[in-house]
Amino acid sequence: MSNQQGGAGTVRARSTLDATSALPMVSVILPARNEGTRIRSCLSALAASTYPADRLEILVVDGESEDNTVEIAQEFQRKGLPVRILTNRQRNYGAALNRGIESARGEMIVLVDGRNRCPPDYIRKCVETSLETGADNVGGVILHVAENPAQLAVGLAMSHPFGVGNAHFRLGNRRGDVASVYLGCLRRSVFDRVGLFDEGVDISPDSEMNLRIRRAGGRVYLDPSIKMPYYTRNRLRDLWRLYRRYGITRAGTLLKYGRLTALRQLVPATFICGLAFLGAASLWNHVFLWGFLALLGIYLVINISVCARLSWAKRAPGLFGRLFLAFPCMHFAFGLAFLSRLARRPRSKAFLRA
Image (cartoon, rainbow, N blue to C red):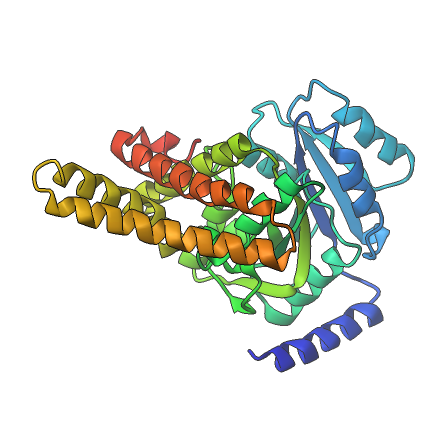
């Protein structure tokens, strides 16, 4: 579908929504555990939604928080926001989503994370695009929000092709059917066809769900005009932990289904294997040392070039060092964890557990 056609379709969908009194009921599912520092801003953003309040419910699925997460959600209840608070005793992200889905009254399920700040038109745009395209899951582009230079560097690394390959929902360079989207707006009926979220997944369960949707013949659709702000991590060790968990769960997906969500997920592990092979082989024959140095040198040249261009574009020379560390942090954390999970090959029920 061309951009022009997509725009016209969106206008038609918007007109339909504006003219229809019976809009689809939407259930927003917000898993939370010890989100006291973020949930107020998240719920405030949802309170500003342009989607009609009488067609909207917000399910805060609390994982037995030990801070004031529940108290803050109750404040919004008292203010009239359509919030329901559920308890997730398993304290697991996939289980939290399932508790929300089981209790949801909506025809559409919108997934939200505590780090998100939904724009006022986010829910409406998701519903419009879903009605227009008929897709089973509709999502937008992650918009990284930075409050300091460290967050800016991490956000840039997580939205650049050198960092994330062709992850369209991070790059915003494609409109149409894709392998996966971030969270998204799912039709309730899709869970009757493919089942609920795998409760063994404790990070990024949307990726595994999108794979199941496509395996069942469904569609996952990306609309780059839909933006989802996301407050990025600002410490390298947190970025390492995040991508380590990503690597574990993507390897688990390969073990469970015999395929990956996207081939780009093989690149970090392949690069590390190449370095390891050439490095080990150089002990036997020094010719391989040149291959090792060439491969590592190419990586460093690309890293330096990308970091320099991004720092120049932002007019912030101080970003260079942070970016120079962020890219390999992502690549090596993901690749090493990916290979470790394949090598250890846990029991099937733990394939996706990070």
